[in-house]
Length: 423
Image (cartoon, rainbow, N blue to C red; front, side):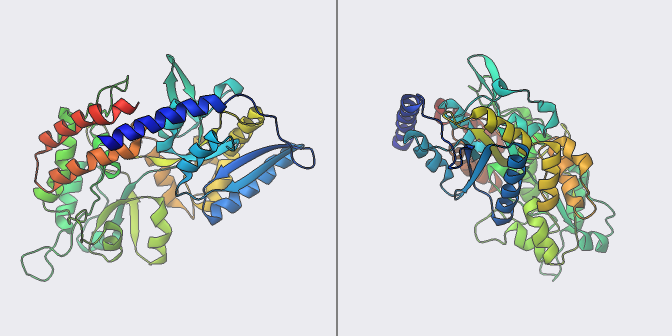
């Protein structure tokens, strides 16, 4: 309770301080007199090289403009941005984690973008653009544009599938259970499986595919009530629990000391896992014969979780109109096709798909298809607080220490009393 109160007090002080320092600042120019915008980004080396190239392309198309790309470590980027807002040293544009944007919107730290020009939200991956849309004072606004989006799909071992006569990956949860049973094998005859059909993580982010495919709504429209404790919620979590407890096709990879899903998949111990684009190169380099398919469909169809980042224009940005034009350029079909073709990533702009050659990156096409039905994470001020609240009860349900109903009933109450109060 003390920690929660401290966070609320800190947020209140932060909001007050941001509003205090938000009154005008002289516009800056580069040494050569060009209009200069500063972008803080947290990319890896390959991505950094790509964003530098894109910045130079934008400058060539916009004489008199300089885009100053500055790298910021991913770890701690949130506190750095908050401190910069307080000390009046914030950049014009910042790349932020999807889960951090609600706090920035609530603190009036970022600008609503539609005031600067048209944004066709239908051009974007639905879950990616939705994470930037917030209602303030009764009106919805767009407070950022996605620069990267990601989620998980079903990875499967083609060699094991062929060995046990499985011709194609499962399309529904019913097929998934049947397939996983065939792939769970006691190879040494000791009465215990040493090869498993599936391996999973326990945490909330990895549980969203289950909730989403069952059509579970996490929060009410006004964001004041948690809706997890519902028939759909119980059914979704029960399936995840049953994979381990009832069907015994899941390896218990979520338990401390177990072989983690990625390692077990590489070693042929786990036949199926959920994973994302970040593992494609790793598995290829290991010469693993694997395939990727959509998450098995539940009553609400196939869906996945959502990760990624957004680009925002900070409240006190110099030349916000130019900042907006840069973000529109970065997320345009042509630049997204270039970005994703060079880096093997999922484009945030759906129109980029027609401009891309997937012959060497067939996996990206599957992930793009998967992301079309993804559902955004709950828009709470602190996603970390939300996850830390939920995760112990997910573990308790998986371990058989608590019934699914009791776990979700408890979680719903705790979210309403300990998480949503921070909205």
